[in-house]
Length: 615
Image 1 (cartoon, rainbow, N blue to C red):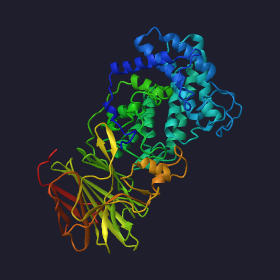
Image 2: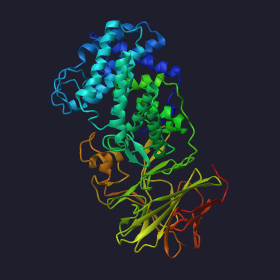
Image 3: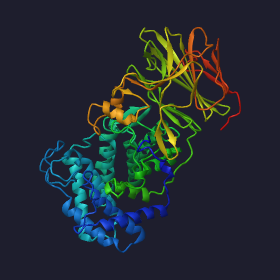
Image 4: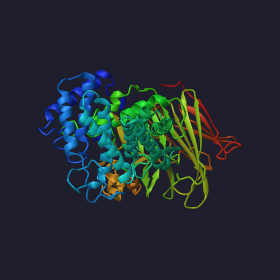
């Protein structure tokens, strides 16, 4: 089973002026064939996200004319623009819309669905999208749009902006991407207005960004992020927010957008493994955007010096939104316009800087959550998620059914590179059911091909094991497919277990289902509105790798040792001494300092390679 939206890395899409001209030529041919007698360019199968789509196709035709001068396009632009101005501008309040601050304002807005009162809650983002299509058309339509239509279009832009910022509550869905998009619309509209009026709109847009978006950023993994549907980050919408920040910086030059974009880009870089797979978020779990992410990932890849384009997108939407039949949909046309206009290029090599929440070298990656527990491990082309046992999720020692991974105090980290090896030591104070404070020292070492994990903790009572992850997905060329096992070796007894119980709160990796489906099934609200991250936290048990204690460990410690990926016979040796715990494997020798750390309480780690680096 392949994951439907986890496809190719976005930087693999053709990225030349000729490629973009070919995309626009295809859009133009589809549009000319679709144009109805009344001027509509809407896809005939579209039912929602529709109020801005014809105008979006019109903006693409204007850009195609600007770049290529196709003589067939001016008439199509004028007819389709007239259609939008005549048929898709609404000034009467949509019955049931809950977010109005002024009733009967008569200000124009765009509808999410055309039927009156059918689904009014989507009207705010649809109006943002319509404003963005409109300002793009004004930007690219010079010499193409007749004076009277241009005046109508500018007046409509004024009305959209006022409806979004005066007649309604700002950002009613608490969606960072929509809110930043609205700010971008205001910044671009300001350039089309008389100077004094334009400066007022620009100032209002910047003030909204500061007070309504930046002031409400959410902290996760050391970063401040624009909130997305009540969470810190969503793997579909987060990169779209990054694209909006890129455009905001491009059109305004305001450094705040670059600074916040850099922070979001570094966060994405840290949570994203080398293979580009990601999951998680409060709105979608595994549904990656496609071309909507390209602008931001490309723009900021150069700014932060890292290969953000490895992000796996839905390449069926590699250039523009499409309907099930593959036909172009204008809903995200504004992003394609900006992507074509932007001249930045992909930065294609990994960052050489060390990040607290990531370990990455070669084809091995570990992304850590805010508690410094792995949120994703990648090795030998397989991706491992945190496993679940007795409603507890993570990687770590388990004793008496209790998972020791939630910190009770400060988590300390030490990063070391030596002899072609990259390592991270995490020291975490934890408390078990017996209320005894223990220190879990987790050492992660990689040569770029395999990952060695050694976990040491004060000796535990009863049968104990290391919860070592849920094998979930693997790279399959240009796609990601579901798996239920991976290449893992343990110094102690290793077993791959599956839930004995059945039901939505038990995830069996052998089943024909995805993490996303399971997460939404456990969410409190319907699909598309529920929080899949919150739903997934209700998982009782999952498929899990369980590794027993390694033989030969010190008497006062339980030591667990696991290798993810290929390698020779795995027979690590352990020796306790005055300076700490020495670990010897076929690839390295490491000295893990005492749990108390150095004079400042920081972890101590010495690392030496046992053989030349193989990658």
